[in-house]
Image 1 (cartoon, one colour):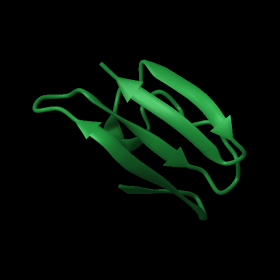
Image 2: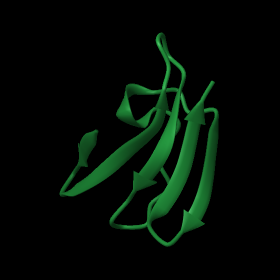
Image 3: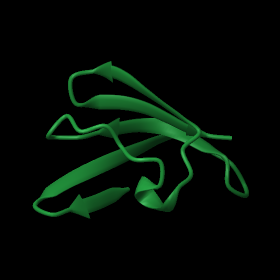
Image 4: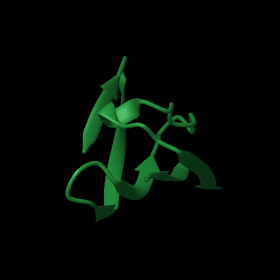
Length: 60
């Protein structure tokens, strides 16, 4: 999924997508900004920095 924030685009790569609302994946943020809890119309329960510009997110 791609989400536009002002002039930047953030990209979400799913690694798991449940039937109802459970999902997890990697977020690439070109400005190295941590994703907020409700980005991508989600409800992230866990956000971990993996590397510069990369985060792992999960909603369970």
